[in-house]
Structure formats: C-alpha cells, structure tokens
Length: 121
Image 1 (cartoon, helix red, strand yellow):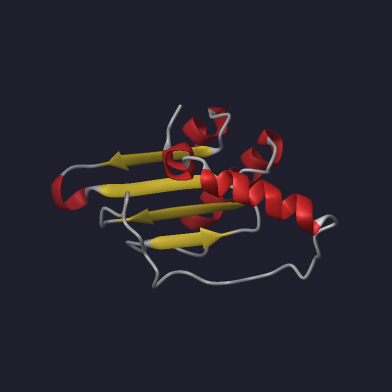
Image 2 (tube, rainbow, N blue to C red):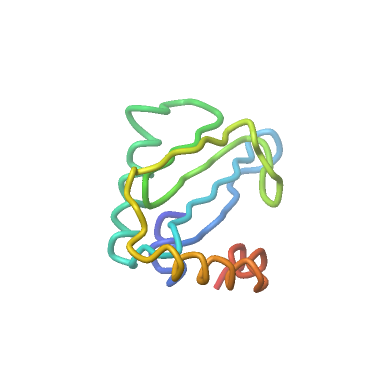
C-alpha cells in the first residue's frame, strides 16, 4: 500500500490483505494541497510508525499527521463514516486571503467532491 500511494499522483491508496478472519483493510491518504514529495515522506513516516513503536500488534490503528493519514483495521471501514475517531484541530494560522479560500472551498463542495476524493487512479 505504501508503494501504491507513493506512486499515485493523488496521494491515496487503499488495500486489503489476507483471507477470512485474517483479512486486514488499509488506507493511506494525503491532504489535497500537499505536493507529491511531501506526501511520500509523510506516508513513509506513518507506515514506519504504525509498524513500530506505536501500534505494534494492534488490530486497528489510525495515525493522523498534519499532511496525511493512515488507517488499518480488521473491520472493513471502506466507504463507512467513522465519527468516533474524529477530532478537530487547528494550527492557529490564519488564511492570507479568506475570501479566496472560501471561494475555492465553495467551488470544491459544489463539485462532485465525494467521487473525486475517493477515486483511485
């Protein structure tokens, strides 16, 4: 999954591995405004951290970094909303041009954001 995401120009990959009760689901993604080099570094860091030392033999893990997220689970979470693992955070930085940011976000939300965000190349 790490190589698949790093090869993706969209910084997104999902995968499954194993069979039956040993099946594992995984997803890694970068923020849409992150360049590919930064995304690759974040993906590499998150996959290294999920293996050791933080998650070890855990059956489920979610790692959030400022620029990417990694999630794996024994439960199929693809296409399912999970609000129990959500959080709000802010860097405290202010937008340089709030009107331009608003216009861009409004445009994205009016477009078919769901299919664009979840499509795989």
